[in-house]
Length: 235
Image (tube, rainbow, N blue to C red; front, top):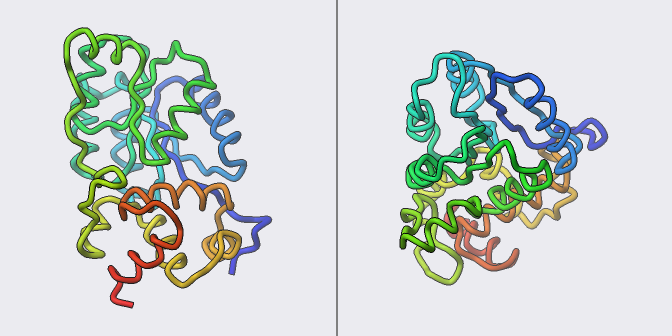
């Protein structure tokens, strides 16, 4: 059993070819979880290697559009195919509304222009980790003017709309392996503190995972989540 003092937090992939951006994002992520672990990629080749090696253990990917080896946003589409359960947020120097729209329709859960403040970035990441989608104000304004709406998400419906996964295999397409582990311990009645200790993560990270689990199970609280997860696991 891991010592909570030595526990690693959530694991985030940062893909950007500017070291200054990478270090700045790392500092801001530490405000979300002091024990956050980061995997860095500074080119398309490194991104592909990082995803191949860590996809099952990643909680979030923050990926730039323009890096050495990339062509347009082809690498984003490829990442959506190879790791569909991985929450993906785009960081970009571009504020092109059409690009934002194309990526959100592709299934990206957030588009954060690099001109935005670090606090906005952190708020957007919190929203995504809780199961939401961050749409920049520029795109929202354009959407209101043109009538565009984001494509239906590939994930679970919002609470109250029905349609929870019918099997554990179905849930695996919506959650990361770490979130599945949290759900298993939750179904055993473990409190957040013990879940954190068992998995070697912080309690803050457990809470973030629980928010995603509640959304995936289409439930409103911990009790409903325990019942739903036990049903899926045949307990």
